[in-house]
Image: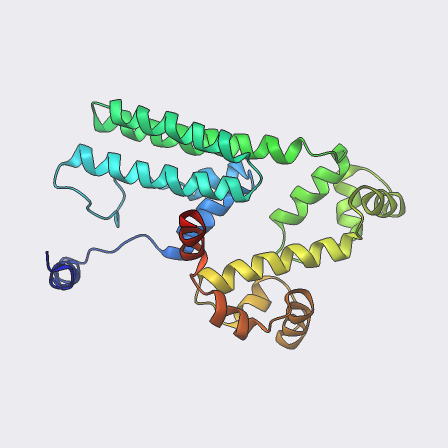
Length: 252
């Protein structure tokens, strides 16, 4: 089989008929929403398999959907393991769903199972996050911070969200997490920046603005201090290398 020749032919047909695949950055955001247990975001980013841009993996429409769902389950499983789900539990759940996919007789059954998989994993990850040792006000603050990384977040806003005084919340947060609220916010913004550098083409300036840093130079300084890399060096080293590293690790 001449793979290069087949690849060129497929690319030609896709251009001729304006067939595209789902945006890579949106796909990564979808998997990350499940990994973080953000159920609302996972539902918002969910795309049914009959949407425009879905790749064709088989000439048989039912088999095509099954292949896509198996791939989706595999990706979700690995993201959830990285997010804190116990590995054996994650793989056992994956096996159950893949066997269920195999038993599907109609496209409607596959599509219904697709929704179930996404909601189930997202809810399980949500519970894993909620079952941390942190008290409810701290968890609410963490959720608020996660949902508002693109805006300015103040201690007063967080205090209002949990109905505590700013001074008491500040002390409680540090006691429970071992870090200050401002340091935690910065850490989460840097985590988001790492993902954007790995999985998107956004410029350093665009990322700094998106994550509400005061300036590009400030973002670069904080990023280097936290990671040991400049954003440019980080992208050169890790851009879209994530799954390649996972595959190598699995083989070892």
